[in-house]
Image 1 (cartoon, helix red, strand yellow):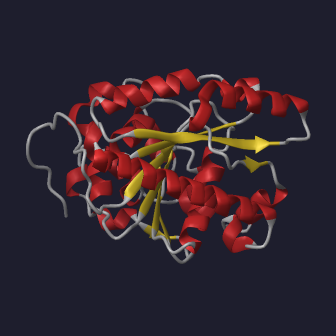
Image 2 (cartoon, helix red, strand yellow):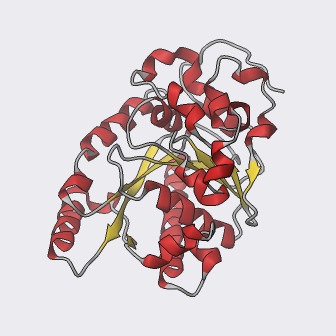
Length: 287
């Protein structure tokens, strides 16, 4: 059991030592591939020898259903999924109940379902010390190398708490007009969260669901790279049927068929992400 002690901290610690590095996937636009990135990257990282915890803070529970199936996720009690961390009684709950095996070596899951919806309020800054619940939970999970947090398509309480808890933000974006809308709001939200969590950084934007045969996709990807420069990752995740087939089999692409293009592209993306994390951490140590 965990108990809450001390007063409201002024900010999250800037030094996590050897604790797991947490990445949250954020974009207030839906359908840009946040969940798909989180799901398939978990597989690539696990296959590379990393111990991964996937935390679902989206009330839709999509990444949870990707691993466990919709029926299992929908039947989970609130005390056995991430919603427990948003309740007033969060500090007296056995946190081990929140973590479930996915059946995939190297990947565990803290799932979400409809019980989380009531907590995803539009004024997260008014939650006081409750803003830090998720972060305290993640800091207790020291057996993992990386935590991936899948956020809902808005900047409400669940996304806010993820930014307060995380080290990095990855923002998937589709190369279309609708997909690129709202990035300024995401950047502003990161800056606001940094006042409470100074270690938070934008790791980058991932171009997702692209089809380079389409001129409109080429145009918006080029514009995105011109506008946001090095923050746009070199590697990308196009729209491929293998991603969908893998999810239908409850497996990340790497574990569904590690020879397919979807798995290869995800591996390349995971390596670039790890390199960026190492570079960011090195810069912090120098500073």
